[in-house]
Length: 322
Figure 1 (tube, one colour):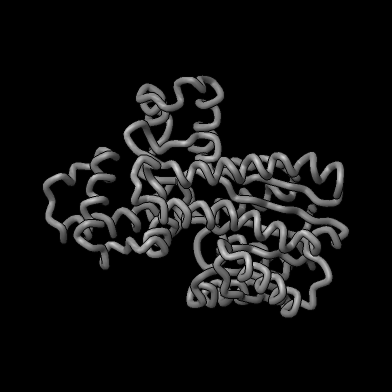
Figure 2: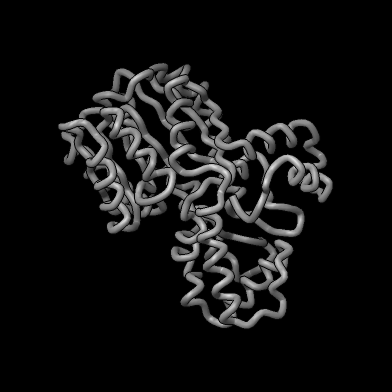
């Protein structure tokens, strides 16, 4: 698919970050776009940006949907069909995701594990199933699933636990790789790509905390202490700071993840869309993703040791979170 002009694309998680930029750049290239998100306010901002930069006649629709809920996903599909009078779909970007879910040894982490895994994995699965008939009905189509570098490296470093997110992103990667041959054998007009970003400047930390009930401004004392333990595990010297100072530090971390990233969401979206045009089934996004991919392949047995982190830090400005 060398051109997006006149095509129809669905983008999940289109309210902020890479989803917003994918929608904006697709619309600017003449593509009709349907986005979903859990925040109507964020989606309306995305819609305004799309309409301000797209050719006349391009249709942008917004749909409230939690992709972890299959019934909401099915309603989203119906909404897309109605809004665009759609008989087929050309592009499906399963982009929505949140971070979360630490150590599985903690019996209290189950709810957070389930929430994280359901958004990051089941959201991809449910949307793929829901929109597959429309992809099948198209003359040419492309399914693009966002995994992460945590889809091939299940860590943020040897002193932290990143289990639920990593497990879900490994699932997305494996699912998408399986679809390469599945589509080749059973639906050759559909292509599949797995996107593996490194640290991209998005609101994923802020949005994840809100969805998991961990907004720093509203955290309970117990939640603050849990957060303190996590940050200490990352090597941050917050053992003795006051609760108010800790809240402020957490706010700054979310904003810093977005504002100080080595690659912006707009740059990441351009890499993804270029990869789709080139029909790459494997799209690494960011220099840190390139470096991590190489280092893991060179020494897979070392990937979860401190020596690996030392190599990574020498080649990238690796920081908190992915």
